[in-house]
Length: 160
Image (cartoon, rainbow, N blue to C red; front, side):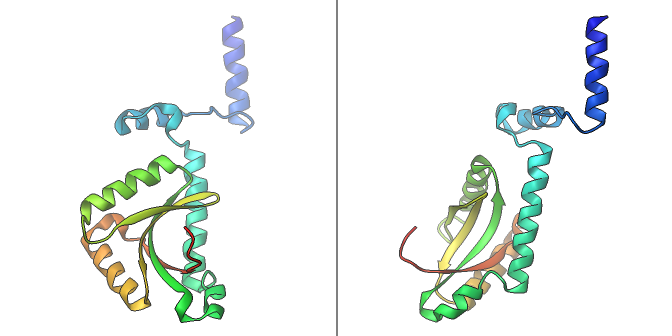
């Protein structure tokens, strides 16, 4: 009886949105498919937050807001990267990087750059926009996995 009452209270509170399990059942099922413990799989809420942040970043890139500082520095300081993935999980970012490097072995290399709160998987370090556009076209046409990839401009400070 005591267990039934506690269960009912948990269900009622959960229905109000005040209580959500730390790792939902979906994370446990997903963890078996990905061959990792459930505590390492992102919750649905974390994935939604990551997707929202990535969508905002893509929109800024399309509007040209990301490169505004770079434009003031001049062409010599610009470096172009192709961002193929971003996540709050470093482990997922590493998996995407490794998969990409297997697919494009010897052609392009990918690196992970952490800019809080996301780990970004980026390809290149191209010196001109034309090189980056050409590589982006090749990457998008070679694999459906990278159809949302986009070009990012950064200032080359000589530091990683």
